[in-house]
Length: 200
Image (cartoon, rainbow, N blue to C red; front, side):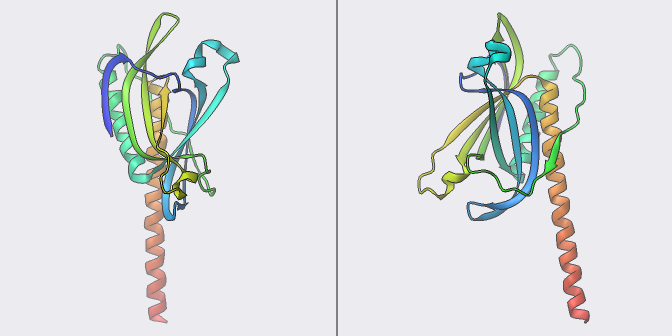
């Protein structure tokens, strides 16, 4: 992951201006590999439609990350916020993560992320430049994994402020910690069962 903060106006018309974000943790067979994952669900409007107000059509984008990648994204976003906070007049308010467990595997059109890039950026709306955080998710859709030449896609997501990003960071960290703790419990139970079998 490459993290940078340059304060420039850097956005694409296809980017999603995120209005709400949540994270789900789960474990499933994905592309023939069983993996624990963090599923980021982002809803909002396309940047090109942001000036339409309530009439802007809503969109939803979903990014699925392996636990190690989710942990790395959370660390990168934390670094970006720290850099932004140095130029802010007041410290940002703390935020609690929104997360849950899911027993459903990722959907076919979910993006299985191979690389993320987070940076501080800004968007211009009605003559006002607003600091934001943008994340590019690069990967392929889950359904394309069966293809010999899966199409690489890039989803750009723009988060409207530090509080929203802190919610995402907290959510990702909680999912990672919970998944790792669950693994430790499963290993412990498996070891206990093996010892019981030997004793009896």
